[in-house]
Amino acid sequence: MVSALLLVGVLAMAPVVVVGAEEGSLDPVVAEVVEMLNAGVSDSLILQWLESTERRPVDIGSQGLIALSEAEASEELMTSLLELVEEGRVEGPKAVVEPPSEAKTVEPAGTPPAEPTPAATGAGAVEAIFELSGTRAWVEEDEPDSPREERWNVFLYLDGELVAWTRPDRKGEPVETRRVIPTGSKEMRVILQRYEERRSGWVYQSLAVPTLIAFDAPAGDPLEVEVDMKRIWGAWRGRAEGGPLRYKIRQGVEVLAEQSGTGGNPNRWQPVCEDVEANFPDAEGVPKAFRNPMSRCVRWADLWNGPGKSTSRSEILKELAEYDFEPPVR
Image 1: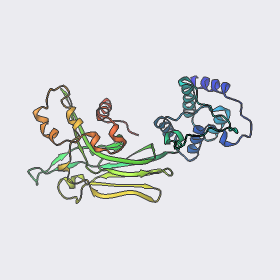
Image 2: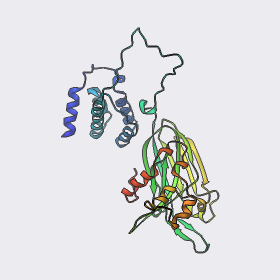
Image 3: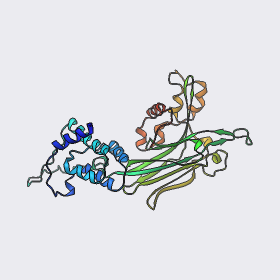
Image 4: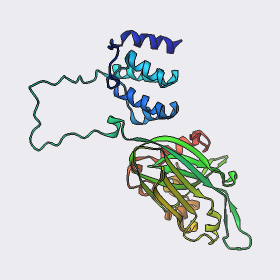
């Protein structure tokens, strides 16, 4: 009922549009949404794109609603777009673009024209399909004939944000997630993580795979991102040359980045400092049990060269704890 009333209210306020107006008369954001719907992008991914890029339609109007309906937009998506229009009105009026006239404003000499950002144009977004595989690991330690099983969850981060994770009990079966990401230079990392709940609270452990996966994400067809850690047990036992990590990133038939047998020896992987520190948040110093991992750990910001540097590992751990470290990544 609320959605219907909101729809009627916005239609009442919408400006009259001349029948037969060109498609270009649609609000730019609405036009992009219609284009994505026609291309087969799901409503949920479009809603995520709207949230991540903070795109806001100025006005939708009756023609916009008709175009969305013809593109088979769901009521949820149309209602969300209408609510975004209302949010924009509450935040303040948008700048009005005056029609061209003979008198033109001249830019001061030496002032370069402002380039539109991806968030402003909406052109800098692409769908990415992440496929992550991982298995349990065995560590030899002092007895090669009696290796100890290590159960690690494999977490995949893009520019410091979690995009996929998998449990060791999946026996190598891939986990697939989808999301809309901004185009441009990207960085990915694999972090092994595990958590144990005790009476005193959660025990945090992590190991950062040293390989930084860097690639460019162009606009166009969806990206297919495959990351495989199935050979981790062999690397830990010295049987996987180069390391257990394999990845391949494609767009259509073009391979954007690919490498097999990388990551090095897991025995030399570093813990993440913030994860180690989460085990003793109120201690005045470093407890004896954590001195060794703290002496060889790596800071979260030092794992990234780009946007990942500005992400907070402490906030990531806090969000993971809300889901008992099994977040519903989709």
